[in-house]
Length: 481
Image (cartoon, rainbow, N blue to C red; front, top):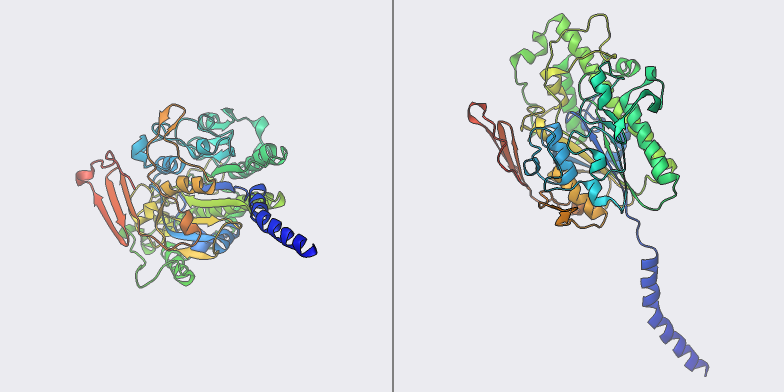
């Protein structure tokens, strides 16, 4: 009888074990990751510490060290086209965002709309596309739609551009006194405030999507004085020496192969350090110190946000993307020192000009608004402790800012619909990078751009670039990936 009972028990257990296993898998599903997308504004290819830059960026460097650093990643050369593609996964020509803000609901939906319902959707920072964030899937928003605002504005028009949840942001909304107010600090403060109110305090198990679109280091050159003083002596030996210093670091870090990529010559003879006057040398030493301080301040504020996520046990299951909307800007003003002020203070309106852009985009040719590598190349960092196949990788996989949307859909296990709220949607131009995030082999890509007088195509290791005859606008054609 005992033997019969043993046999019955074994048969029963064997029959039930698969059901027990299935039940366990269903009862304890892997939680969807939080999504944090960080977009810098006009940051050069070689500005981060992990890319050979002079700024101290330990928090972003650590993300790269413990995540994946993509060194062959591309944006759309200008603010609005890049932001439109990031949010929609489509080329800017498809949605009318090839020059200015465009309307991203024309045949498109945003990441926030795709995640809405499944995720808590939050945003801080620069939007620069249309319609407004709260109309395109975000539940909370703080930031300025277009203007690069750093200190509290001296221009009333800029004050009106700062928005909080669809209304004009005012001094009563400040998290610090007006004399201590700096936009990047306020970005981080509101990011944490939104997370506290919408996620932590509510005790929700719903993951969050936070789009953190910084204004840094876009001109005007403005940064806290203590930050600027950290870097005043860094550029005493000049901009040519700074380019060489960054190039040597990039070789040592394995970012570039010197046999393949040399230090490109600067575009204009007048950009040679030895050709500058004493005042011009002092100008660029200060300008580069302020720009570098702005990159440093971005990292400091992101570090506070990362610490907040860690404190609230949200960091390990947060998939973080970091990149820039275009290369450093060569938009110029006269290289004269501000009278009676220190460069970087409130009210100063200086830029790094083409001289500084050549340093920031080392070793690449060109700058913002061109389709040379210095205009469209950006490092992209991906970090997700719970999901990366193998951390600490420097990946040569080519990728586009259009790829972020489909990658996020894969991370969230969601499908792209054919219609949304009565809008018939175009197909996505990007493709998911999730296989490469999981350490799949590199795949060859074909990437296309049209912007103003430039057209470009990258296929594998080859790039073709066309400059339209007589500078005519080439950007009206459709560019897809």
